[in-house]
Length: 241
Image (cartoon, rainbow, N blue to C red; front, top):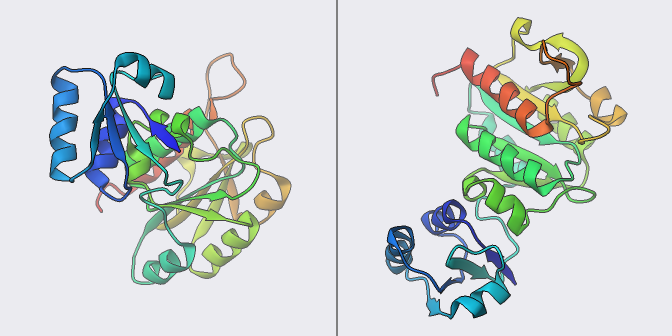
């Protein structure tokens, strides 16, 4: 059983309308009233609890939680379907997450992927952060909208994307300066693990690598911040959709 907390996350789950569940309500106020109105339009069951009961079930609640027995993502995508549809597109942006382990980073990256219109996010089925309650909350509800495909093998997914006309770039400290790079119309950006970066195997499948210029004192950006910069640069070059 999953219990999602956070106003943004609950609102976007209700707006997406693809996951069945029920609202657990203990509080009141204008934000909760708006959530109740959305739930009524979606015919989502509502259970009123005492604050003590809700605290026990969902400790991080702000007077409301969305409970579901579904482990799926409302925006779950299929790589085969995406590749089929991509044949008719002039451009597309794909983000591959090479074993991101921190759920906060995972959620923040999904939020950026939504903001910058990422067409698909790909993550491995094993040894990576799941789409947990913490990740959903960190995404501020973006996880309900960003197409997310789970695959068994990232290197194979990259090979298939390349055959479909995509050019892939690994985020790396020794890569080409991002502002100087001319990104392809169909681009794949690969972000690596928080500690190890993009793996050698995955990087060997990429067409190139990109680095974000730095002027400060710390070694690098957090992976979620770096992903946001990379996605922004692609959209800066191609603002029209």
